[in-house]
Every structure is written in structure tokens, then in C-alpha cells.
Length: 323
Image (cartoon, rainbow, N blue to C red; front, top):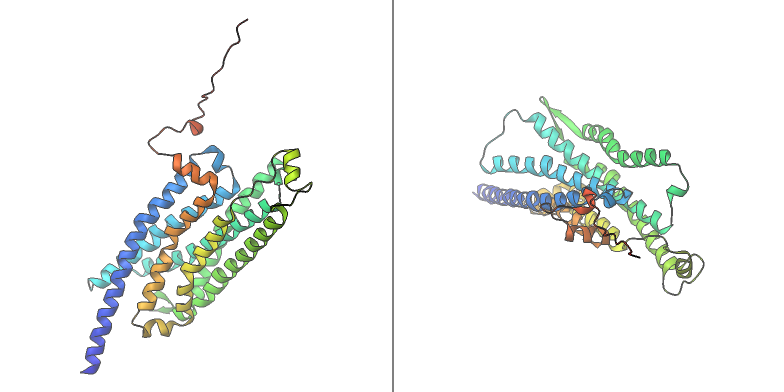
């Protein structure tokens, strides 16, 4: 009698948890789609913004978030709704493997792009100007290589990683969640730790080189005499990107490190970790509002309003001097 009662309680808890996951995924699909779509469209419709390498990485990150919402969150809603309705989806092995593969690939991409954005911040602090060191041809090749590297790396590494932790049951592959911590450590913990170190070094160098009282030929006095100095963004945007990724993925990392604990807590811990990890797509676009150019662009840009900057319309007024 006690066993049946405990099983009934566990079943109710599981159904409550998956219902929460469905609601959270729907919220992420709506809010994340709107915020990432607006961020991506506002940058891509501005000629000035979309030519900056930093903004191109941010556009890639917004694209990854949208891809994760469409391919991961939507499939998660379908599977959990089928579970709630006590419907077993038949012949969905390929769909299930695709869901797991996209989950791993999007996580690898997001963390790598945050690392690349951190490198751009350090380059700003060091006043690294590639235009003065390389020809336009090499600059174009280098930019394409930097933008393509995270995508190529995730596509090449994602499938073998899933295959390494999966076992074949019948005609389908099922990942062993107890081995997921290996992927999380290599492709999440390591990139975020490196990004944290890079941003920390950048913040320290910024404070020492461009802080108050640093009036040298390379500092404030040099800027006043020689013109504009190195353009450095607010550190809060880069710190916030790392903090959001770390905060939203920490609980899921703990779940993978101790899978038995997630099951023993009635799936409540797993549900909290899953909801928090999904929220990354919503919070990441918000941290980039600390960047002045992006914030001003988002405040002013409206899709129904004609953009004079993007359309190339010259609004200057010429005055002829009469003798």
C-alpha cells in the first residue's frame, strides 16, 4: 500500500514538473524569439553596426538563441505535451536524436561565441587595430575565419560527442545522462572559465591604463592631443554575458554530475535546472543593452519606420552663399 502511494505521489510530482517545463519553454519561445529577433534585426539593418566584428558575433549569438528556441524548446514542448497526454510518440527516433544533437551543438556554439566576444573586448582594451597591421584582403579572410570557427567547431564536434555518450537500444541512440558532465565540462566550463579570465584581464588593464589620473602619452593626455583614443565598451556587457551563461548552466551541470540526486528529489531539481538553462536565450540579449551603440539603435529603430541611415538618404542641406 505504501509503495503504490509513493508511486502515485512521484507520478503527480513528475507530471507537475513537466507541466512547468512546458510553460517555461512556451515563455522562452515567445520572449526569447522577440528579444533575439529584435536585436538581430536592429543590428543587421544598420550599416554602421553590422560592420563591427563585435556586433557580428552578437548577431551570431542571437541566431544561435533563435535556433535553440526553434529546434530545442519547441521539440521539448512537443515531447512533454505528449508525456502529459500519456501519448507515446511513435517512430520519433530520428527526431529525438536531432533534439539531443541540437541541444549539444547550440550549447557549444553559445559558450564559444561568448568566448570570442570576450577576446574582442580584450583587443579593444589593448588598442589592437588590425587595419593598421593587415591588408584588406587578409582582414576579410581573418574575419570570415573568426566568424566561421565556432560554427564549424560545433558542427564537427557535436555529433561525435553525442555518439560517445550514447548507447544503442533497438534502432535508436539514447544518451547516458550520467556521462553528460564530460561534455559540459569540456565545452561549457572550460570556455566560460577562459572567457572569465580574459574579461578579468581586460577590466584590470582598462582600470590601470585608462583610469583617473593616468595622464600619459598613451592615456588621457594623449587622447586630448592626438584625437580619439581606443574605443572601449562598457565592461558590464561582457561580464554580464559570462555571468548569465554561468548562472543558467550551473544547475544543469550539477544535475549531470549527480544524476541520481536529480531523480531522488522527485525531478524538482532537474526541472529548476532545465527552466533556468532555457532562460539563457531570454537574458543574454538584455546584457548587450549595456553597449551604447546597440542600446541607442534598439531605442530608435522601428521596423515600420523607414531607416534613413540604412537607405542611404542624404538629409544634409546645402546653402549657397550669395555675393
